Length: 280
Image 1 (cartoon, rainbow, N blue to C red):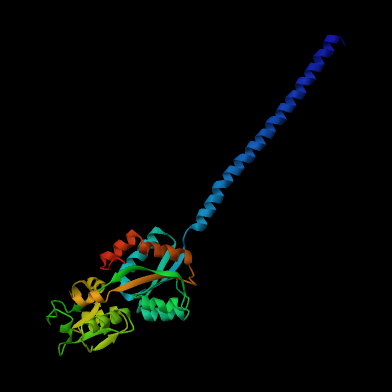
Image 2 (cartoon, rainbow, N blue to C red):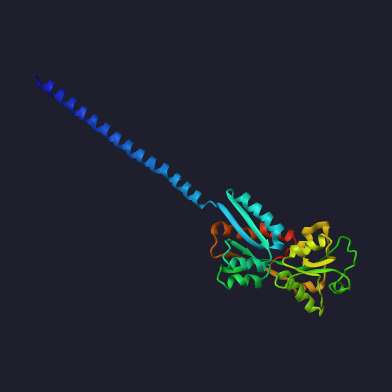
């Protein structure tokens, strides 16, 4: 073999080795690129899983004063619309009865009371988380039959002989407030019945089983033309603060906190003030 032929063969082998090396380098680069791509594609999945775990779901159980029925029912529907997969259930009633149920172990997430005194039943047993927040206030009003046939114009008029008047029980916030207004006016009133919550007192008038009842302005508003409202100045001395709190053993604390936030938000306050509640 000539020197020229040997040089040609050696050059060919060198080029062949170089080609194999380049191919290997390209393959390694491709694997590395594929690995990076795979890593990047995993990130959205992890992020999505995290976002999904943060999504609210399940039932929120709210124990609330009877006077909150209409406005809280509206807020419950708003909450469910804003958080698909959630459901808000309510137990409306006299605040003292609800408080006793909570301290007795009834499962609930949120308690909204019609007075600090009834909220204290829960907080004194350490069954609430943190300090309850006042979210609205409510003022009393006299509910009479439509057209006010008995011409009730003041709190004193409720003491007229023969007039059938209903009050909330004194242990219930609306009853305690009514008694406070009567005491401030040095008036004595013997009702035909004491009711366990404000809705029951109002119903007596709606069914014409009573001529008048001392209830909240919000309840008169909710009743529409079924009753007629009569304001009285003494009510300004017996305005109730409404506190709300997350309960200690709340089964759905995350969603409960968001419901409370809705109640306190500008949107929630708009619903409540439209119902006749006063700003805190």
